[in-house]
Image: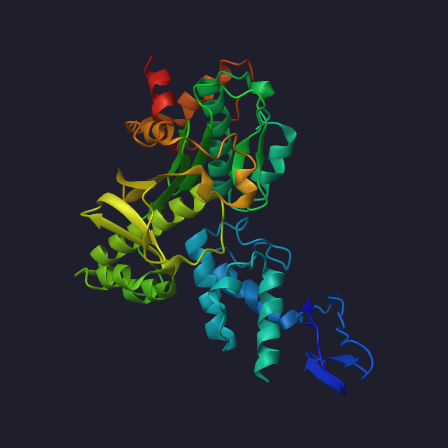
Length: 134
Length: 279
């Protein structure tokens, strides 16, 4: 699941078209003001687009999590699995994120790292970061 | 588990590993037993909920005057489950087990966490001498940070490299956040035997995170009241086995959960509570 937020755009006398590309999604924001009007500030609404991370990514995350938490290969680990429920303590969570960074060649900020609580969230974040790198 | 209210069941069964389920169960039971013993609330009237960040608190309209801000914190790791409570100050508790990493060296393991430590803490860890010593120091600092964060109820999301602990051979422990000493916070670190450390943090209620603050009866205290609360003598940990705990609960005519494996349970009821227990 990818989430995209836009910030408000403000342009004085001009018409501009902005195009961002994130994970195969295109987002366009448009704003303009005229001479005789006070500057208009457009407030684009925040919207979330559901876009599931690739199954291979989720599977890879599951594998890393299983290894870190020493879970047997047949244990039920899915996208919805919460790290804490699988037995991860605060130390494990940090190590899982480090493992993901190594495996996927990404760099996760501490603040983001601490918000990941499920396998799916980790997979989504990985895809998001990889897309930004591209 | 039938002893506990229904809404607690899923919080235990969500754990995949049986050991985690047991620890979660014992932790819940300890919380109810503590509240029952210290505040004398009948078991079936005890309501314990969690903040959005996951910190448990007691829902109580009629708090005893002797314990204006009764709050507690529990922790479990390895073979121990512990709980501590305070009548006025915030309390945070964390247990760590000094486990030796399996798939990597101690140095590699600790390196993973470098961004969570201040430079002076990191220096202390790295210059410890042996791998074992490095691990011990690492786990102790981690334990302190966890207890601090848990006391405030922020859960995750705190910039831990800005939180710097100072101590004299692990005594007189105090903390500096962003370079400024927090004078209304104190910390104690104890070894629990079998390679476990436990840390207790005690601090001012106004430092609690927004969501947890709403669960407290009082945030502001005059200096004298706070001084008294802050300087309450420390109760030492009371060690109990799970059987002891079940007896406390069994006394309330409930069916105890059958736990086949013993796990040591330690309990510190804070100053007021300990006096109660010793009587």
